[in-house]
Length: 340
Image (cartoon, rainbow, N blue to C red; front, side, top):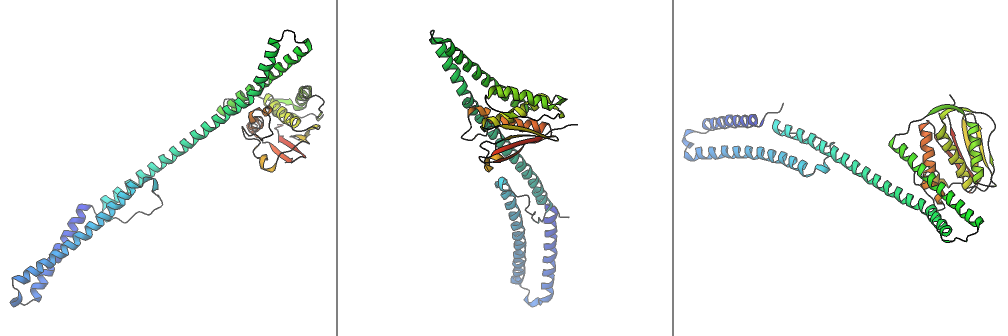
């Protein structure tokens, strides 16, 4: 166990006193009395004084070195490395100071790391918020402009033909539906992000649901064929959310393909197959990220939330979206669903 500073000083004084006494005694015995003049005693005194000064100097250097180490800790908090071995201290006080400083610096470093993480998280949230506002502005601009344009024409021209008036009003209605769909997706995504959504699980046959989605989309996409399975499949899931998943996947297939779209059921796996433009290899992992867009995406991509919502819904159902695609040859989007 290391001594305290007081104990260390007393020990050194005792050692020096004993050493000086012994040295002086040896000198008196070894030197004949005829040579023991005043200069002899002065010489011995000076010699002992030099030894004392040397011992004090060595002790001072140790204290200076250890104080320097403490100063380095305090002046380089951010550079402190907890893996550095502790120095060998010759007194307990300096060892305690060193131990306490290391603990304090570790806590400071931990708080600094937490602060940096928190700052980075805030920056990420602000960037995402900015991206979202930009996406919202971009997505809503086209339908709002269309509504304003058609409404202004109908309002200013009292002599507009009835057929043209009806066409413009239909355009206004469809653009209003698009805005409503965008808002619904935003609200749904916000509920997912905040963790507020609670699954409403039930057992139902998924085939009639697919048939219902097919009828609605074929009315929207005229002259397009959607081939669906005829076999029944009882599943246990949130019916409203699974409808959003299947509708998103089929509608994406219709948007990016000019040929027929096929829905297949294989066991508990549901696949949506198209023979459209496909997805490049570098974009397959990105298409399910929120706000992801390619240069060819139109505003109908719903702010890049479509597949992000699909991914989140499947995650809530302990499933995942699998994508296989080849450029200019088509894509297969599939997922499994609980049938128990």
